Image (cartoon, rainbow, N blue to C red; front, side, top):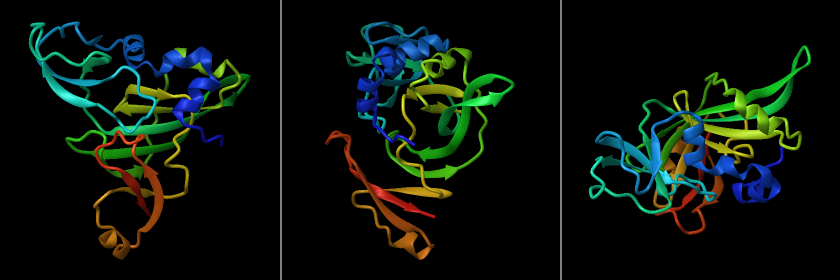
Length: 218
């Protein structure tokens, strides 16, 4: 499997860079959403994120209470708001494959369910799971390019929130549980429970508030 990051994929697939535009994707999927400066339809809690983020790790994502009154609760330029979805966070890899009887489509490979808290970028656990998520028909356009074999989808429940033009680089080994280890975390409790620490440093080029050092896995 070709493990590239999003910056590499941006250059590798120049015809499909719009898929990294989360506002464009949300519009295609029919969500209530809009860029900074466009008021929300009703006051309430929304998810606010950068329209583009090739560095990953959920940089800048947060929940905000927003009001239709333009002067209140403004969000930064370059960000967008979207309706809030409830459910688990999933990251799922797909392969463009022959499905039989002359049909091609996206075949699900790996699925992981994540847990996080108020800091949306700071996940506390990833567990391998089965969650069949069928992709909308227009995702087949990516496979029909015939030069893109793998994609990664992130969703909240069955609501797709991100598309990556590469597989997930963090969850390829044959483990069932991954505990992200952040700077300052004590790994000893996990080691006693039979976990093994693997180094996988990530700080989003210095933009994460706390660097991820790796995972305790089993």
